[in-house]
Length: 159
Image (tube, rainbow, N blue to C red):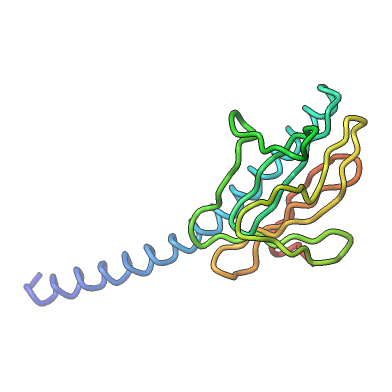
């Protein structure tokens, strides 16, 4: 092989490697969104289990940049600050949008002092939907149902 042929082969390999790197970056972003959706699903389910086992309501506070779990107190709701149900901030570029009864909820950047949904000790859950998206792209949907089941819906399957 001549030096020119060798340089052409190296250039072609560099282009292919660049295309593969860009493609994998996009896949990684989608995986991160799915991971965040599945984390929210698991944490809402855990909050509802704890409400049923402990006989105490657990609130779910949503913000555009994160979410928190809340407990009722005589003075109002208090965020759980430690353990699995501690407040969660979404990574940079991620955003939440929530609906309840097909109405878009007005969310602040961070969760407020009042919950948007509540897990009741009797096993009920005030239903809601949360869409988690990265940089405005179509995101994954977390759907909380009245019987406290929580499901994750992929972007292709979302209505």
